[in-house]
Amino acid sequence: QVHLVESGGGLVQPGGSLRLSCVASGSIFSIDAMGWYRQAPGKERELVADITSYGSRTYADSVKGRFTISRVNGGRTLYLQMNSLKPEDTAVYYCHYAFQYWGQGTQVTVSS
Image 1 (cartoon, rainbow, N blue to C red):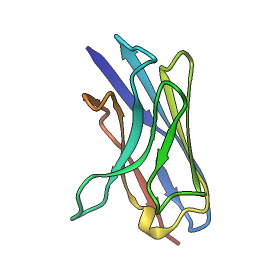
Image 2: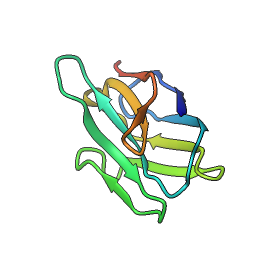
Image 3: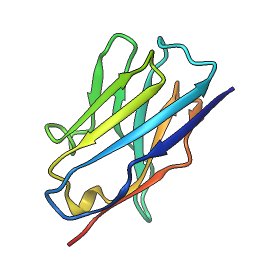
């Protein structure tokens, strides 16, 4: 069993930055992929960024060049550094482990 806890969300002005964290506990294997998805009101959940055990990163086109995903602490801690935030980045952000386990989500609101 795996438990994920996200933190770091909040309200930020356009152009600002936030860093999301996701801490995993339980049977974690660094070989498994982790990543971030988001869901805005009235929209489907979408990929933000993924990272594999080999360090390969995938980003949604909408966040390339602005967001950076990283994984540390033996694979138990996942970060998402979000810069140059836009109102369209407003959503609940979820981390996943191996696409099988999901956190409870953290709200990110970008507004002036």
